[in-house]
Figure 1 (cartoon, rainbow, N blue to C red):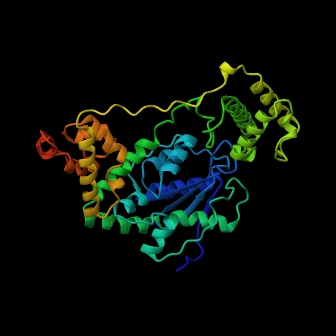
Figure 2 (figure 1 turned 135 degrees about the vertical axis):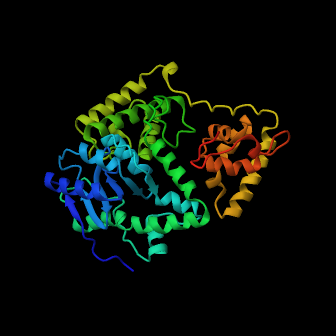
Figure 3 (figure 1 turned 90 degrees about the horizontal axis):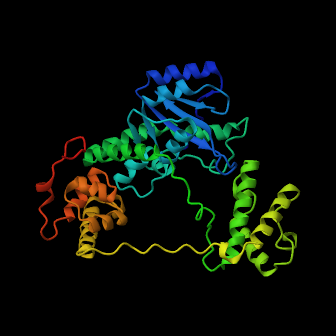
Length: 397
């Protein structure tokens, strides 16, 4: 069944925002999604916020110049539903300082913990609700104004069905005894998305794919071209690939190394936009890279050697892998949902005692650590239940 036309209210005035605020305040929970312009601008921003509350759909325009502080303060106190909310929560945090204080329920996480193989919203809506959602908004420039009606409807459908979808998934989580798994995983999602991104390593940020066999001279040219491209993209507020793609950038660097006495304009064809001041700056960046003395050219980064194995680590790791695989098969889940391989390796290396130790060593939730503990009874280890006990809220003593 294809959905009929979605009714919605487009919010781009102070009066409309007041109406939305009253609706949000009265709602028990709110479904939320966002649209951003990452494919169309350098300074990525939230261009649309879709909300469904008590069966009513709203589309909030954050580019309309409204004062949104009070709205986000109100929204933060509500129970929220997302689907694949990692990106949405990060964008709302970076753009508006938004941090949920109510409970967040992510239907994507819930579906993964129930063993669904197709986790996209469209696939789940069709399987569980019999609704076929349209496509066509993934590459759209959501900063355009006015927005076409069909794109707004596409956006509305991202929250329109989240409440009934959440109800079905929540019932199935309860039937399977996995409700607390989902709630704890969603709390971990909120914590993780609220952490600021670390500063990029200046020696690695420019290292794009395809540099493995390049010489130091060629790497110096790639680095110079990358920084030129980044500055031009920032200046024009466009994605870097719209200045020059990665493969053309590498091809240009290789040509420049083979033709040290020729200007950049004699090389591979440049984009039409690379002229005037942009071309002048490109030529200056190339000249500076060519003049670098050999000692200042970049090296390929050395691969960090793996940490030395500790006694019994490999045996513990293999045992954990086998036990986790058995547990995952019994639960009808991929083994990576129970615990990623990197987590098992860390646990095998550190050999922690109890759930709390496994959580810290492997970066796991308590429910994941409890499942992993089924494989932790190697030699000279007490049964896990003799080492720890867990509260009903997921904390451990």
